[in-house]
Image 1 (cartoon, rainbow, N blue to C red):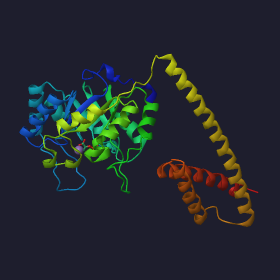
Image 2 (image 1 turned 45 degrees about the horizontal axis):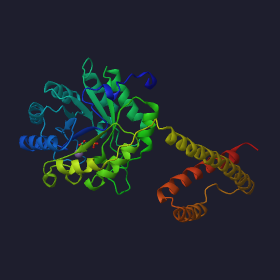
Image 3 (image 1 turned 90 degrees about the horizontal axis):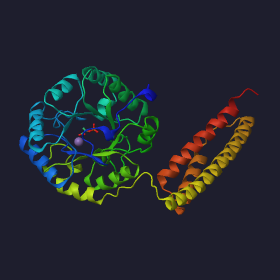
Image 4 (image 1 turned 60 degrees about the vertical axis):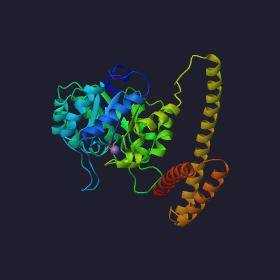
Length: 364
Ligand code: PEP
Ligand code: MN
């Protein structure tokens, strides 16, 4: 199905003026005054394209602020009247969709917990049959690309063609500096499978702290994302949800002002020649890496053979610990991060085990 989707390119969307498309506004609508003051300040300091606010808040634990509900829709309608900004809110079921459409909300987004649930997505898709609107689909909380694509396909099948993907990171059991792990390779793979899908980064929910918004936004711009969705609150320290990650409209303008926007290509031939030279060098190293990996697997198979002859198990944890520890140390001296070495060596080790396994279990 995915190769047949005809998603409307973001350049054709009525809200799009330039890269990055900027969606900003508070995590939650809290009061009429908070919403209006935030919107007015945002317009004063930033080139906002779409104003966001959550009305129904999916909270991990009960008892937290769960949103103001339908009242917020009236406030959003007033914000649109006052500032002219198109509005966006999160929907998680059919009645949210119907209410939001009744109040003229321009963009509906589907949250990360909802994207992980095909029943909920199907219910939303059914409510959208025959409707013309824009739907942004956040990645599911778990790093499952098929689930994300499946959600996009369900919404597309309802007839919506203004569809975008929001990258908000993935939850993990291990604590890292960010609230949600970005796992940049997933959105990159999504873009490879669906080149036409607009990609919007949500640095607020990836970082979980306002101090990370700049670096995550810059990284997404360097990966040629089309837009940013950033939480902004008139008074973040009093916010009823996600207070650590919200920026005042003024602070947001400072962060955005520092972003460096690079172009994906250039018509400067001197630059293109240098780039092409460097890329040829990368290709040579990549070929060498593949040859070395092939050699490594040949040795792994030889190890499998002697282990089989001597009836020894494949996995020997002490040996593996020794390899990874040595590699992290040597890698650090070569400017390679722990995270990269761990990923690379785990993948190589798994592939070696697969090769050994094949040898040890093939009939002699
Ligand atoms: C939000 O955008 O405020 C939100 C709840 O996001 P997520 O679904 O990414 O957690
Ligand atoms: Mn939030």
